[in-house]
Amino acid sequence: MAPELTVIVLAAGGGTRMKSKTAKVLHEVGGRSMIGHVLAAVSELSPQRVVAVVGHQRDQVGPHIQGLLPDAVLAVQESQKGTGHAVRVGLEAVGTTSGTVLVATGDTPLLRGESLRAFVAEHDAAQRAVSILSGRVPDPAGYGRVVRDAQGEVVAIVEEKDASPDQREILEISSGILAFEAGFLASALPRLGNDNAKGEYYLTDTVQLAQADGLTVGAYPLDDVTETEGANDRAQLAELGRKLNQRIVMRWMQDGVSVMDPATTWIDADVVLAPDVTILPGTQLLGATQVGEDAVIGPDATLKDCEIGVGARVVRTQAELAVVGAGATVGPFSYLRPGTRLGEGGKIGAYVETKNAEIGAGSKVPHLSYVGDATIGTGSNIGAGTIFANYDGSRKHRTTIGDGAKTGSNNTFVAPVSIGDGAMTGGGTVVREDVPPGALAVSAGPQRNLEGHAARKRETVGERDLDREVDPGVGSSSPGGAES
Ligand code: UD1
Ligand code: CA
Image (cartoon, rainbow, N blue to C red):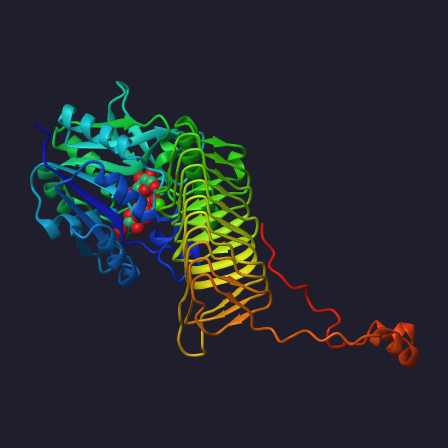
């Protein structure tokens, strides 16, 4: 049986170079905070306990961690005296003295659970006091170097600032992620000194202490150590976000999703796509968005926390917390706000904004409309340029439209109001009263035709000025409902 696993996540340091009011580890890539990615990776190991060491901006960081992982223990490091001191604070908070302790940092969003799992498994199998997750990099600047002896055995980690010119040439670096035998760690932490270039208690000095104790130490080189990269500023954050996205897009393509332009396709970590989904250029699938088989998304669509049905088509659309049924079509230039539910085979067309709107199967809102706080049945058609007037200045009200209704162009539904099954409305109708099933509602005044008016006007004001005159009846829209 594997030893008990305790994970200590270090997140007490400041993030000065982010120049942000938001704590560094709370900055997001791929739809999750950096520490959110780390906690997700760590959780894949099913550890017995997770301790997060917080300090800087802990009023933000602490609640965020507890929101993601309610069982996590928070340990407060009042002042940042180094990684060794931080781990001591974390370990003392849970009093662990047996099993394995994995130390990770909160700003490495690319770190994979499977890499951590392999590292810990190797550490446990080798029964070492300390294991270093290491890797070879072309440019080791800024990292602690893994120093090996003539036999290739690990003897120390030397921090860059304390390294000799020879040691600085070493290309094997420590990722800062270490695994320990808990008993050794507990005994080593109080023995750390801070007589070094930074005047800090370095966790990395535990390697030499283990050596001195005659215990085994070793390094586990990761094939792609860039997985352990942290972000210290916004440029690095963007770069990690790009790498993470590349990885996510690649994974979906391997799982049968067509992505026409991976470089302009952004998919958050929690998105779920079915096989044979097609994603066209300029598409962002964010949050907990799910897309069903054969759906085509894009070009230029941003969908956050949406559910898109099998075979649906969503073109040039902004949508959040919306559900689009199987075979339905949305766009181009549609804006779906939270609470939009479009039924199977339905349509939300060009320049249509919807909010809290249930649009039943086969129902269509094809053109230039605002549909707020509405329930529309099945097989109904809403005419072009219709406004669901849901707000009376202080409260929101709902409009209900039945099945098989056909409403005219340029209607206004002054909520609360309802339109019965199979009812119709004329062009330009302002619906203030309920319309019974099967009825036709018209509210526009009777049309007046002033015979010979144009010719008379031409005589008095001249041809040029006639064009500028605004007459009753001239320039008004044609009656009747547009349907498509
Ligand atoms: C550390 C390692 C170095 C490794 C590098 C990888 C040490 C001494 N050095 O250096 O070998 O190559 O990471 O990126 O461990 N933290 C606290 N409390 C503190 C100090 C730090 O919580 O008192 C946290 C920071 O928030 C950060 C992590 O520990 O998440 C690493 O600290 P940092 O100061 O960035 O260490 P590095 O100099 O990068
Ligand atoms: Ca660092």
